[in-house]
Length: 324
Ligand code: HEC
Ligand code: HEC
Image 1 (cartoon, rainbow, N blue to C red):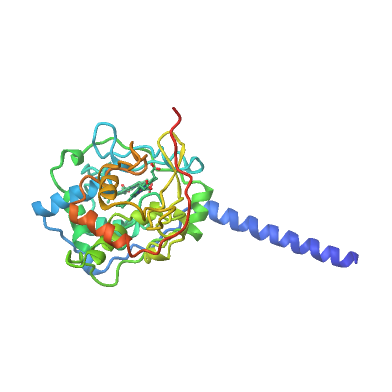
Image 2: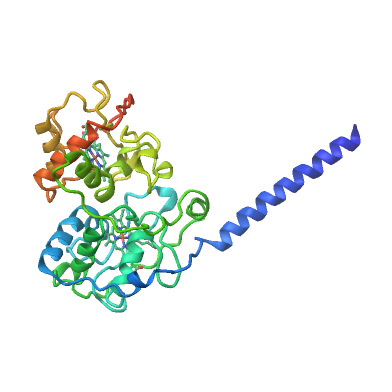
């Protein structure tokens, strides 16, 4: 009897010790480093500085970059991420202006491409969440972002302001070992689907370009960057997010479930919601939903057509109500 208690005690101690070692390892190891290993085609990538590309890139940036990188005066010098969970704060986005020292003026097109796909910098360090990664974006769309980053857009003119690098805490370090890892580069080129197949086109705009599913599925830690439809609660909403005051705003169920989703909406209501963040109940949709004013009509029509094909999920979301 006594002997078995002793063995049990030793086993417990051993387990405790292992857990401690694992925690210490993660604490000191920090965010894992990865090999910066782009293929030759990426290493030597040179995106043409073409005005059509720049224009498309600027449009994509209003959907995907500016919200997080723009300071109050409009320059893309980074800012404190007030809407990131308090357990992770304070975290900062960085200066992406063309300043060679404080921004990304020294990066090659290939380095930007590799970083936007994977989050891996050329020195091997990795940007964990909450810099998004874009593994499913079409090459032409990615090139357009790069062309825009190199353009004469005044928001990107060299600026020396810079935030200190974020000191990621144990939780982020832990999640970066188990839940978030860099997506691989696509195996072959990704092209923008033709608008003649609206469902396929809309699927690209929703999942590949805008990543609507990321906010609109159940949980950021359970999303599948490579196969979005494998994300938990795909488009069923309820992902708890924060607004800039630190209040929780759950994302909406935008599957076509008639009771708890948007199955009873008209296309016009959907259009107004996506384009201008207007709720059919009157009033606004709340941040972090934001107006997608630069999406074209065919892009919004495509998303709508695609959402008709997403399996409806019954999930009643507790929606945000502002205090008055
Ligand atoms: C949800 C917020 C968010 C969005 C959206 C976002 N970023 Fe970031 N970005 C960040 C954060 C936070 C960091 C800092 C990550 C770190 O500390 O490693 C960052 C880092 C970067 C860096 C690295 C800068 C450096 O000097 O290391 C680049 C380049 C960048 N972002 C470009 C973009 C572009 C281009 C877009 C749009 C396609 C974009 N970001 C969208 C939050 C965001
Ligand atoms: C940054 C996170 C985020 C992204 C990205 C995002 N949404 Fe939302 N969306 C939300 C949140 C949060 C709400 C709920 C806002 C509220 O309750 O007022 C919402 C609400 C909506 C609604 C209203 C639904 C209802 O029942 O009222 C629609 C429609 C919608 N989003 C569509 C989209 C589409 C389409 C995209 C991609 C083009 C998208 N959203 C991208 C966070 C996001």
